[in-house]
Length: 222
Image (cartoon, rainbow, N blue to C red; front, side, top):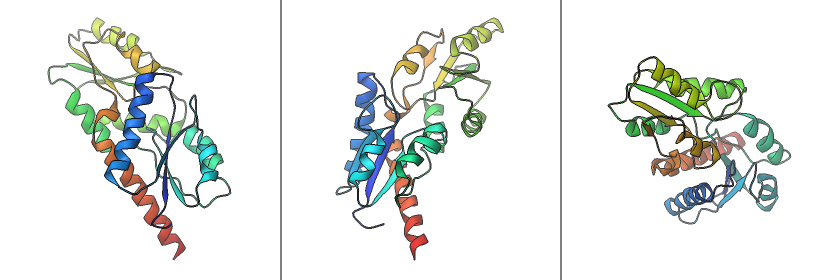
């Protein structure tokens, strides 16, 4: 790794104009915090350029997944994109205390039940990650999903209402706006926390992932 190492930031991708803008703003915030750092934003799905298109354009890089768990996109899509290169891939952004602290700050203290809402997945690492997040939130916490297997967020909210919960907060474990996030506002809860990328600490987290992997890569070559 050299001083000119590129940070390849890999997001999921979305068709939502707001979500596109939010991820672009996150990448721009990372670049502002580290003047001179070449930050290149790319995606694993929906949007262009794909990570496989960006990797060949870099001489030296660290790949940072702008994803909330170590699931299929990290283990397959990103791994295949860097195969044959010396580019290390950092841990994904989540789970991390930055996100649990952000959720806790945005959940009203008057909420008597919380639905931790995330995109569904059958990947064991993803499931372990979301349960880790749930364990760090206060009070009664139920898991709800916007896709895949498992109970839908709206069904979990309805169940909590039937059991006597009067003030329900949906803790959105989603990085940016998009189809999944929009459905949360139709789930019947009293509050929905904002997308996680709105927290300024996320840009610092991206740089910590980059720095940690860059130092690890340098050490392994000595």
